[in-house]
Amino acid sequence: MEGLQEKIKEYSTFVALQKGLLKSTRENYSRIMAKVLRDIGALSPTHQQFNELMIGLIDQGRVSFSHITNHMRAIEAYTSFMEEPMTFKRPRKPRPSIGETLTEAEVTLILASCKNIREKAILALLAYAGIRCGELCSIRVEDVDLRENCMKVRGKSRKDSPSFFPADCSKIIQQYLSDYPRSSDNFMFTTLRRGEPISTWGIRKMVRTVAARSPVKKRVHPHIFRHSLASNMLDRGANPVTIQEQLRHANLGTTMIYVHSRKDRVKAEYECFRPKYT
Image 1 (cartoon, rainbow, N blue to C red):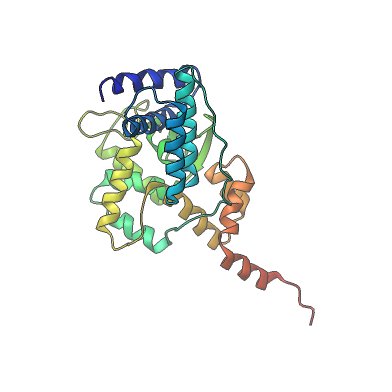
Image 2: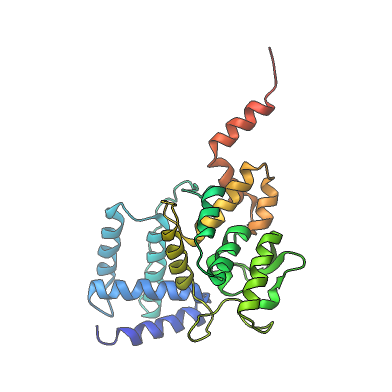
């Protein structure tokens, strides 16, 4: 569509300066709006056209709550950009639950399927530290302390906080830095050709590629390692507060979703600690 790329560029600038959105959110909204405008076939759709598109998306019944609400937010920001603001009423949010996770054995099989130290270093940090994909992209060499087995992570709120990993992971990172030397202020992971910071898309592609080599048949993506770390720590008896600190959840309620999703663990602990009346 003629003029689409320029319009999306102007939109991205608007949401950055007028809405204060972070880069990852801006990029997500820009992708959404580029597709929306192509589907509608106009750079300045009417409110009715936006409404019809959203009704069609909701009625599909196959998309997630976040997918729907992200479309709503992106369109609302776009109509503000066009100086014809509109708002949507959000659908009721479903009760959160944790989907499929990986067992310790499955994570081991995936790590064993890495072909080089760069792949192994990236997947090891996702698996052992449980950091988000975007957080991994922004880590610099100086953020990682291999003596203390921890690193400084900038989370969603832009607040720096520590994330820990075991000595086994430190050895992998040390070998990676030996093979791919870089100064302390450089990004930990960069593209091989241009030396640019690796993107979330690049990490997702790498994770899919490595997982496809392994015998694990589950759908594997970067965030599943975060969920799996929490679930596997729970299975080992970890305190939810410890998991909250490791995953850097602002509220314990977010961490408790993992507990509520593991009914088998709740039942086992109930049988262990219930009082004996007879």
